[in-house]
Image 1: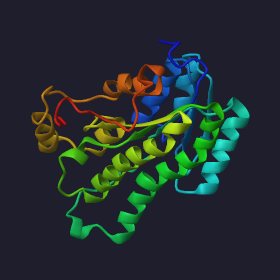
Image 2: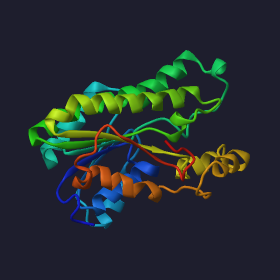
Image 3: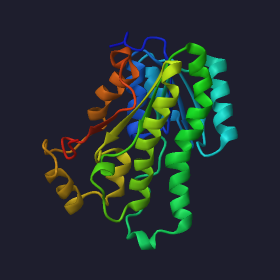
Image 4: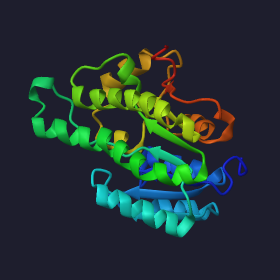
Length: 253
């Protein structure tokens, strides 16, 4: 396991907690030098990475601010070298309220799009020159299984994740000649710490979600990690522009 990404420099945005922290730890265990950027405190995840012997660098990162993004990339290259892996994980989800689309304010819509869509654009734009210097790279975007089946009362979030699927396909076309692959993970409802603490996804909502799955159990962050490492590693060297749904078979496409 430790050799699959040995000495690769991997950036995880939104990696301070929850699924992002799980991504970071999995990359470190696979041998990567992991860089975490988040607006939240990264102390806990940094300690967990160091506990497994990982080389890490953590810094504050606001993915909606180009200056913050560019400075984050500059520091990463200065400390660890050229970036070869990017997990565009930073997004608004568990903090969002479900409501009829007519009640979503324009400001809330713009905020979700700024973080969930433009954030991935800003970070990819800043990281790609580093990958071009390597002559290779892997960008992994994070969408959602809801894109393929729709969801009521969550139009801002689902629309933002639909944009990420289109973003992935178009960017894969644009960067293929540079040896840079762009793929996407689309998890279903994952019982991360943020989801569990919110409580809104429990009860009947959770029961309905589980009943839609071929594998009818709750999903944990660990369920996504195998696919993450596959897309980050050379095992998927001829895979680009793809979206892999990881939701126990709720979506089949």
